[in-house]
Length: 351
Image (cartoon, rainbow, N blue to C red; front, top):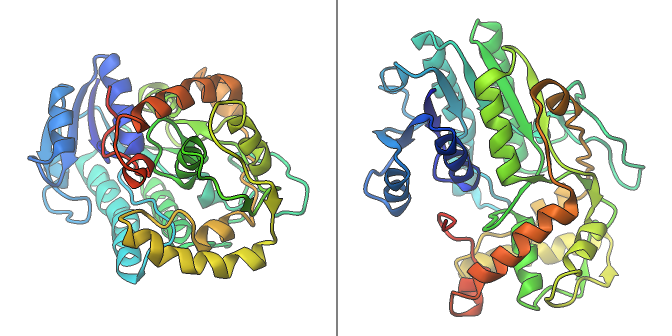
C-alpha cells in the first residue's frame, strides 16, 4: 500500500505513521519543514518527506500522484486560542481540507480518507439531560462551542461536497483522542493529577464522552484506508464515561488528588477567562479556558458499533487503556526537569 499522508507529525499522525509502517506500507508525508525534529523522526521511520503545506494548493496534486490512498489528517486542535491563532486554525482546518480533497479529486485518487471529528455531528445531548449514545446518522452540528468546533464542522461539510462531486471518500470521526503525550485537555488533566497539582474544584462532572485510544484510532484509520467501503462514514470511540468517572479512573493510580468540588459552569467560565493568558505566558496552551467550559456543556456519547461490525475494529476497555497510558506517561514526565516541562506535551512521543 502506498499512502500519501498529511498531518503526520501530530499526536494522531505519529501513531498513524507507526501503525502504517508496522503494516509495511510505503508512506509519503507532506511536511512544511524538512529539517525540523519531527521531520527527522519521520525519516527515521522510513517515511518519504514531501515539501508542502495544506493551505497552499500548488503542487498537491503532483505530490500525491502514484499513491493508492490519500489520508488527510492535518489539522489544528486547541482550545482558548487568541484571534490570530484562531484564524490560522480556520485556514488549516477548512482551507487545508478544501485544498487536499480538491487535489485528490483532480488527481483521480481511487480512495481518500478524511479524519474529521464527532464534533462535526454535533453534541449527542446536553447536560443535565441524560446521555444517550448516538451514531454516524446523528446531526446536530449547528451548536458551535469553540472556534475549533466551528472549523472542523465547516471542514466536514466541505468534505461532503467533494464526495458529492465524485471523490471516492471515507470519513473517519474520532471522539476525544487520548494516549501517552496527549496534547488535549484530557492529557493536561492527567499530567496535573500525576504531578499532584489537580485543582480541588472543577466543572462539567456530568458531561459524558466516549474517549478513543490514539493507537486504537490509528488502527481504525488504517482499516478505513485498507478496506472501508467508499462513501461510508465511521465513528471511532471507546466506552461512554462522564468527566467525574474519568477522574475516578485516574485516582486508581498513584498521583495526587482529584476534584472534590464541582462548581456550576457559569461560575467557572469567568475564572477560565483569566487562566487563558496566564497559561500562555508559561508557554502552555490554554487547556483551562472558556472553550473548555463550553465544551463540557455537551455530551459526546457516540457508538462505534458500525466500525466494529463492518471493519472488525476493536477498542480496549477503560481499565486496559489507562493501565497502558498512565505508567508510560508518568515515565516520560519524570524524565524531564521542572513543573512546567513535565506538564507540557512533547513534540513527538518517544518510541
